[in-house]
Amino acid sequence: MFSKADTIVAPHGSSLANIIFCKEKAKIYELRPIFNKDYEKNLARRYKDISDIVGLEHSIIEVDSVNVEKHSPVAMKYINKQILNESTYYKNIIVKLGALDIF
Image (cartoon, rainbow, N blue to C red; front, side, top):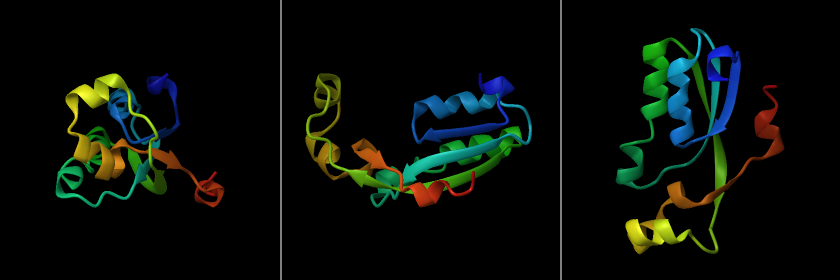
């Protein structure tokens, strides 16, 4: 699907690694919360960097984050509880409809 797409709209996350299969000049719109912690900022540009290498047009649409009431057992087992609670990376996102006016 990525190799045939002209436009990809996706939340920040590992599924965006598939943009390596996109054709040159494809438009990527990454839905991403604002990262405030240093450990979040270290990884924040990874999909933009991939886009630059592959020759894609990459845009970031900032979204609001919302607390998760209950994380999965796997997340609870492997990710520090403090990080799960404070990081915007491990929250749900809300996209304001006005943010998608680019379409």
